Amino acid sequence: MNKKNVIAILLIVAIVLAAVTIVLNLSFNNDNDLTANTISQVNEEATGSGQVSLVVNPPAAGNP
Amino acid sequence: MESENFLLTIAVIAVLVSAGGLGFTYFTLDNFKQNWLTGFATSGTVNITVVNTASINFDVDSINWGSGSIDSGQTSATLYTGGAEPRVINGNWTAVEQGFRINNTGNTNLTINLSASDTVANFIGGTNPSYQWNVTDYVPGACTGGITLATFANTATGAGTLICDQFNYIDGADVIRVDIKVVIPYDAPATAKSNTITATASAAA
Image 1: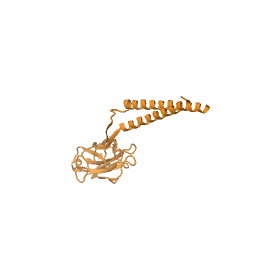
Image 2: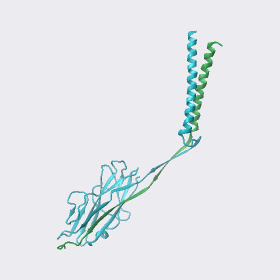
Image 3: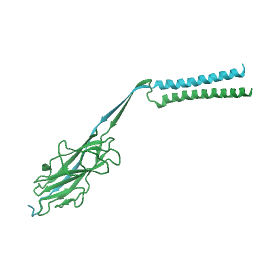
Image 4: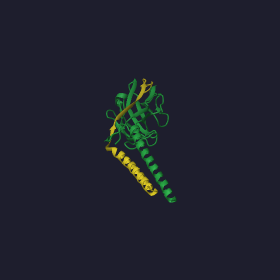
């Protein structure tokens, strides 16, 4: 076997390996066949409160 | 012959690089499946639920003028928070500067309704009492739309009143202020008086 044949065989091997790599990547992408995305929103209600307070004393003398 | 040796070297390098690439790809994908994906499946549906949380907090939840009476010779006393001094007119209650402060602590813009627990007649009593609130931005841009800001308006009971149509949730622009004004007539019952202001928030449209 001369050197040219060896080179040719090696190049073919390299091409095959590269092709296998590509197929592996494609098969991985196809593995993830996620068919739908569903986005839903849940709205809630919230409350809070504050207190207003005072004490009214009897009016001072002289009020109407 | 020299060029053949060179090509042979290149071919060997090409085989080695291809083999390395294949091995790297295989082990990387395998590792990705094993460690990065949870419940790896060949097909399925992704469900994403985005929860818009409506959440508010009264950072200031009390307005307490304490004990006082109407000055001699006056038909009424006026107490208010915010605005200019003296904040107590014709009376000797303790002046309060700080109104309620409502903070949007959720992750969505809100619509806010305010309601008072009792009518002005029941809360204050007497002849021509008044009980009002005034909503303003505590920080600029907190409330956009829905009301006229910085105006005192009569309180409401029951379902209450819309005070802000778009209450911002972005930190730094998510706090509104509610000031209170009461007018106490001379013939209002002399008792301790208390009223609860409730804010109801829901996600804005």
